[in-house]
Length: 338
Image (cartoon, rainbow, N blue to C red):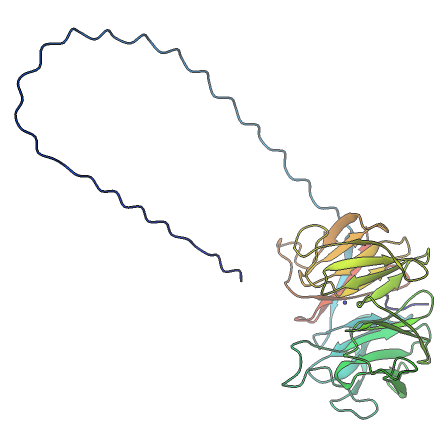
């Protein structure tokens, strides 16, 4: 099954002012002092030792190459999120037009559907004026080519066929009829479970929308070949590792831009070798092994040495090709594991 598997300083400048005051006093004439005996010349000072040469630091080891760019192609929108189906077609979330746009593997537009609103097949991806300052709208595709969309500000998930025909929608998470609270990153794991992250956790469904349970950790999630689940906790800047009972058995990460650190890690995918890839707002993708050991990083502007300071939309196909796109540009990067 092919599916997306994946959520000033104020430098205080202290100024120290030191005032120096010198007083001069007048003095009266004094009798001449007696002639003093000559002062013996000081003994010669020993020659100081030559300074020790400072060792030249070893050059920093270059970061490991985790992904190699296979090709790029351009879309006619700037995607907020992307997903790829088994035929290589790409689905992009277009925030401004509240649409899902379908492209072939070369970026040729094939179809589009949606429009702003709350009717079936319509979306609300942008927050209202009094809403939270975040964008919604996430997409994933199942092995049959059906498309699932987090219709964030309508607080629901909608399901379509690959041509955009509406199939179903749901907005509750169980017997208590709790309403989805801004559904965000959405993914289908290797167990065939649809995972929808919102502010209260990850809500799990079968592919017909039947509620299956909730994981208390909130973020995009994926499962490796051993059945171990990983969840990116965007606002805690860490990744949780869960066992088959969804109990936390490991975690890594902290706030920052260094290796193994995160700035709002929203998206996560896992390759067939159980490598864990995490995208965050530093504009890079970091790779970790199954235990969270840092393996290396990749970012679009590698040639210039500076990443884009924006989240990279990210998805992976069944051949371990990773597709990435920064939401401020139209370019899609197709990457292969190095």
